[in-house]
Image 1: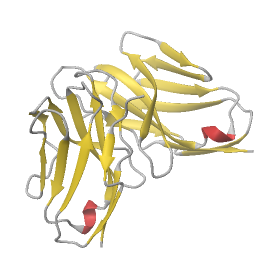
Image 2 (image 1 turned 45 degrees about the vertical axis):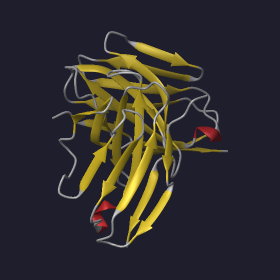
Image 3 (image 1 turned 45 degrees about the horizontal axis):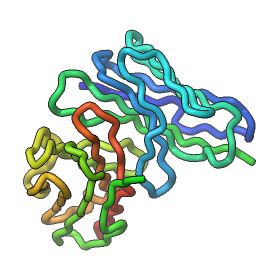
Image 4 (image 1 turned 90 degrees about the horizontal axis):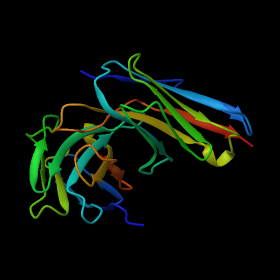
Length: 114
Length: 113
C-alpha cells in the first residue's frame, strides 16, 4: 500500500527566506505527483503537477522536483511571503489506470513571519 | 473560472441522524471523487465515479455511507446513521478524465455531537 510522508510537519520562517518542503513515497510506480495548498478550513488548491516522466515543474516562485526512483519530491518556495502561510500537501497518483484516487501525506504546516 | 461547488459548507448533527452532502463538479468533468479529511490528516478517498458508474468505493463504509451520481453530473454523499467518528471535512473533486489534474471544492465541515 502506498504511503506518503511529509517532512517537516511544521515550519516557521521569517519573511523573505527560501525554503524547501519534502515529500517521500514508498511505491515508485506512480503516474504523477501533485502539490496542493490548503488554507485553514478551506478546500485544496492545486499548485503544481509533475508527470512521472518529468523531473520538475515551475510556477512563479514555486518549483517542484521529482526523483521517482528514490521516491522523493521537493517543493521549493523562493522569497517567502506572509501570504504563503498555509498547509502544503503532497499527493501521488498511482499507475495502473482505473481507480485513481490520490494518496496524500499529512502535510507541512507553514508559517511565514512578517 | 469554473469551480467545484459543494453544499452545505457546514453541518452540525447529532449522532444517529442522517446527513447528506451535495457536489456539482466543473462542467464537462467526467470523473468525480469524494474524499474525507480528518483534522490534521491528509484527505482519504471514499469513492470515485466515472460518469455515473462507481470506479472505486473500496474505502467507503458501506454499512452507513452511500454515494450516487445518477445522471453523471452532480453527486450526493449520504451518511446514515452518523457517528461521532464521522466528524471531518468532506471534499469533492473533479477531473476532466481519469489521471488528469483533480480540482477540489471548498468542502463540507461535518460535526457530529
